[in-house]
Structure formats: structure tokens, C-alpha cells
Length: 117
Image 1 (cartoon, one colour):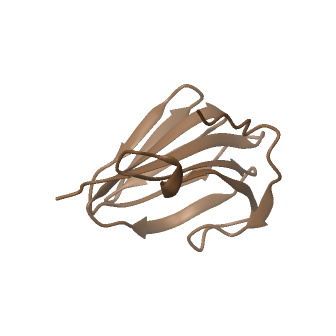
Image 2 (tube, rainbow, N blue to C red; image 1 turned 60 degrees about the vertical axis):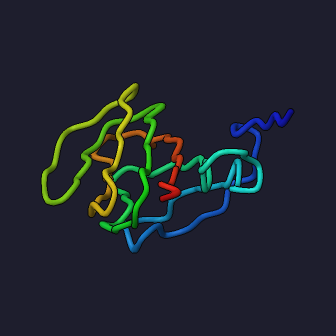
């Protein structure tokens, strides 16, 4: 059994995928913590006007779970508004990114699962 509290984890400041602003970030779980095809579970805080830059993965799904905040999510050139409670599933091989358009930090969990084939 593994239990970790992401709200108590130390956060590091980083620019994520060449996005705007310094996000606060921590790896809550890594691939070795799972017995499933999951690469990681991260907790990230995106400041107002901050973003994850547009980036592309391989044959996997990256899932953004928005705990708090509002923003815009872009996948393959299509942009939609997102808010707390939304869960976004990035398609394999898709270009994607997320921007905080609100006045408070956007708090998200990011999980990446890969296709083993």
C-alpha cells in the first residue's frame, strides 16, 4: 500500500514544456510505484497567465484533472474553455497545452498512461 499527500509534498518551480510563467510542480508517483502502464502522477499549480506550452507525446494518454481554476485547453489546434472539475484526456500523438486564464492559480493533477502495444 502506498499513500502520499500531494498537498503536503514540496513543490519545485519550473517552466513546463516551454510555457509561460513559473509553475509549481511535484511528482507524486512515478512509474515504479504502479503495477499498471502508468508513467507518473504529478501535481502542478499554474499561476494566473501561466501555461504548459504546446507539446506532443507518443502513444499514450495524458490526463489533466482540474481541481481549481479556469483556463483554456488546446489540442491539435482546437481550443476550449475549462474549469474546476473538468477532466481532459489528451489523445495519443496529439499536440496539446493548457493556459490559466483566471485570476487564481490553476491546480491540476496530471496522469500519464501509455499503450503497451
